[in-house]
Image (cartoon, protein in one colour):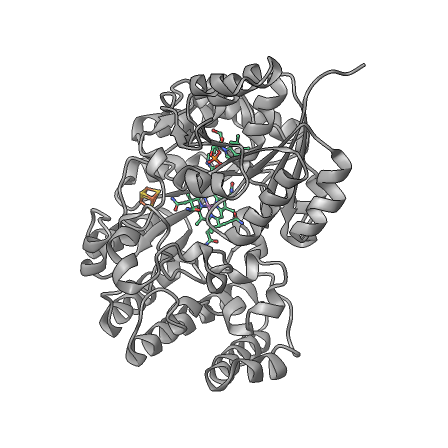
Length: 513
Ligand code: B12
Ligand code: SF4
């Protein structure tokens, strides 16, 4: 008879890519003798919280339900948590939102919250769970928050961050239904992800990573061994290095490239990094070693915004880096942000000039990018009271906020418009979600959106006629929406429902035709 305890790990929010962190969580529970099953609410096979509860949780009837979530759709996630708790399941939660707001999470149905990196905490929890679950012994579980026997919140100190990431080994996909993430070309979104390090030492004011400032990395040998294994097992040749900032220490990237070159494997790879972390020698080396695309979080081409979000570089430096990267021959995907409360049309004009200046080297500019003031970021702390968006994630209106609308919600064609999906999603600015903007600024963001959208359409469509048709439809959609959202849905929404642009982003197929 099998006496292992069982855990059902749930990623309840719709997602288009396998969430890598959960593969490590699943693996750790398995190593601790749990029978593990995983339910990820794949975007293409979306389940309501009630259906997760009735068709999965009740059917599997696990000893522990573990939820992993970021700051999105929090009301519904908490509803699921409470349903599980009231049905008698032991509920634990981890990931970005529970880490930032452990007390809120405990008030909404969790028995225990795991804050931040959780491998060591999982080891301790497993021992505690299997040896009688003494409530008094919860105080010995590092990194965990709970409500103590007197009804007070207790937050145990965290374990130090892991230094030896090699010891974690490879991501474990065995409990995941890969078909839920299979896209039109047969590849599985997220199966090409390789985590090379954890954390980012920078301090951008909009970035929600309080627990991840400290940077830890794997050795080149360990990363390459995982690439080889993934290739042998799943046939992957194009990898996505899923780190927050891939180039933190140049010497280790040189080492990685040297070893990859020595291997002579037919691998290509994609990564994202910060402007200012690369130089010409490193760019050339990475290209030689198979780098197929860099994503740069440029964020703005205006010095005031760069300064105020603490990016630590100037618009000129951003331009120089992008130009250099283009000249070395590495194509780029570039993120630009909008919607900062101090911005005026001038900031958008600077972005538009930047886009035109570097256009020839860039595969695509991000099709969204209005700032979301995530809890615990400096931008949230500075503005939430004066702008009246305190705890926005607990309000009905904001449940869709934070996700890329067309990519991640249950039914993008129901809640988003053609231009939001195909040109540029400026909803949070246009509808004053968090900050109030002037009509002039909104028009400037819409103009920037058209420039970005036209470029994306150019990259993704083959015939001139098709490009023109899609772009005109986008402009029409934007204008109708400005008149009345329902009008857009009725006219354009009924004409065109497909969006393939985002589908290929992380597989690196955003190549100019
Ligand atoms: C790779 C990545 C992505 C990938 C993959 C998503 C994924 N979830 O893996 C993609 C590109 C798809 C993505 C998309 C988005 N992302 Co993202 N992403 C990241 C990034 C850079 C790394 C995540 C990661 O793999 N970390 C490493 C692993 C090991 O850590 P982890 O997942 O947190 O898991 C550890 C612990 O948290 C814990 N844990 C996690 N879950 C659970 C569950 C249980 C039960 C337990 C016990 C423990 C536990 O144990 C794990 C092992 O130590 C993070 C940055 C960061 N610092 O987290 C942003 C981050 C998570 N993303 C963020 C955002 C905003 C988004 C988007 C909303 C962007 C957008 N506008 O669309 C979407 C949302 C997608 C979705 N539906 O969830 C924010 C979330 C902010 C917040 N407060 O919620 C982050 C923190 C970036 C930031 N600094 O602002 N993202
Ligand atoms: S460089 Fe990127 S990951 Fe690092 S703090 Fe800034 S936005 Fe966050």
